[in-house]
Image 1 (cartoon, one colour):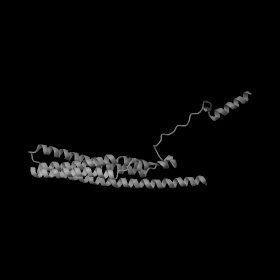
Image 2: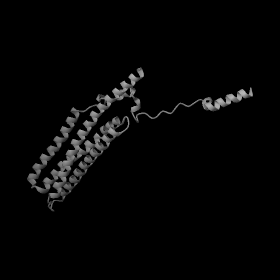
Image 3: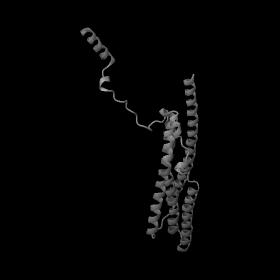
Image 4: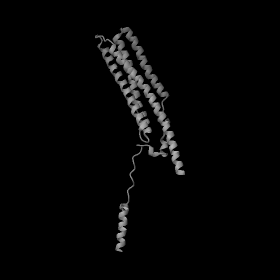
Length: 225
């Protein structure tokens, strides 16, 4: 009876922990989906504007800057979209269709990929503003280009400063994160890959013989006697 109650308690705790991890999984999917959508919009906007702009031949420096920022913007945003797609599809698939403990592995893996995804998105945003900066010098008169450059530069500074301020405001230290480490003591067999498999302890030299050989040896000693 006590063994059955213990198994039932472990099963209930396990189901509750999986439900909590599923909330994290949905949170990551929502955040990554928003970032990927914005990155795809910026990549499409940059590519369309680059194709439709008629570049004058007498401004090689501005054209070089424009081509560089356009390439950087499209590549950064495409990498962001690709990473979001890979993480969302494969991570969710592993969490829902994997073995016991796959939910924890998938959620922790998605959390680890946030830095690369957000870095590519930030680079794409700044590169898109760089495209606007270069296009101002390609298409506008000098006086208007100076004013536009000041506005674009102020926007870049505002984006970077506000991003750092908001990140500092909502930064979550590793020690303050909700951890599920204590659940390993309840059902350690579900935490796949956390500890290497333990090899059985070596037997003493006198214990290497099998039971059959041991019985055979005792019979021989009896016959000799």
